[in-house]
Image (cartoon, rainbow, N blue to C red; front, side, top):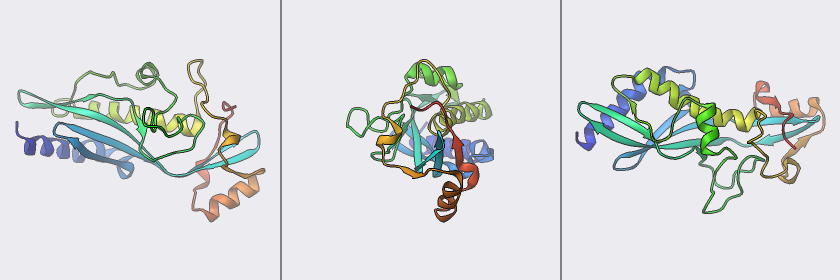
Length: 199
């Protein structure tokens, strides 16, 4: 199958399956190599409430890279790397500081991603014969990362890499001021999350 046919298969997959999800306006993809694609999810700005202190976080882009394999008359994608933030130097308690080795990496290990999503790294997923299920699995992976950032699920294996108070993102010490900040910065009120698992 030629490169053009692979591109067409991926475009068809997105228009037939990914574009029919509630996340359609927040999803994007791009080729990162001859047989690799990056699928990303936009995470709008949000605010975390921790012990009645409110911290603002900027818009984020969470992406995962997939290899594209051709098998007979099917095109399959294979998750090859754990999701990471595509923003440079994104400040968050569960994101490693910007460095060449861990740039954009979240506190989840590979096993955590597999346990909390429907994806197994290295496992082929069909675009043609099981496109809907493949779309659901990819979304489960990206949404898992979004939930870690916004509403951390407590787990013994997940720990804060940096303290939230060290990130200089405190914007309010009461709900009224947080709501005002959200309004002034075009952050929807439903994007203010209680997150009591942070340190």
